[in-house]
Length: 352
Image (cartoon, rainbow, N blue to C red):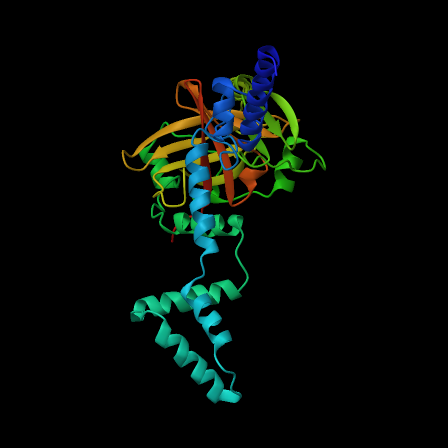
């Protein structure tokens, strides 16, 4: 074999070796980008915004993936009860109660002993596995019910309270408890001239999301995150500028606690009402400082978005779906200084 032929053969073998190595690594391209993808790291920027679908994509994606892996491993390991069941399958079969007792005794001999509390917890967990599982929405509703029960300011927005807060807002002719009275969607739609319009839900982070700087509602892209925030600001300002008459009719949307999760004690309180033009008015009360500021904003007839500001601060805008405000819990967004945060408005009943 000539030197030239030998050199060509060596070069071909090297090429084959490199190609095989790439295939073993998943066929990823070389360079920095290929190394990132080979490690499972995302290429490009993760979606921005605090109200994006963070369960699917977030800046902490790798941490979530690690946690998911740990959870998967945990689930793949048999529990004590499952190991006991496996042990029972290997035990000789007996009939009737004697067989059940023998198998239980054998399982107990092989299992670590639990304390009384641990045993009760295990029994509850086993019962939960056998029973119907509550949905995430049902769990959240139960948590927000606790928020409502922990509120203890029955004096808010009543006659005596309005006397002590002369700059607060109130509808003409309202009784002491009117501010707390929720109004159904049909009544709101009828007052505002929405006719038989189907109520549109705004569940931020679920059917309304911000991914890669784009806002998507029910699968349809409706603009950039900046445009979406600006629309809320414009809507709030237009509603604030709307002329209202002291004697006109206002429907109460109710009183809400503004919280970020169901563990938060309610001390930021919103009382909101709407008129036939879709203007929003009400009060924002910080029960810690006992400070109250007026609310002003508006609702859009076409999109059914509601947005408002508090006091003289026009740079901070809150928004929620108008139909959501007729329900027990309304997801909300807070737009402030170019950032958007998710909050929750939990309907409060007037305490006894």
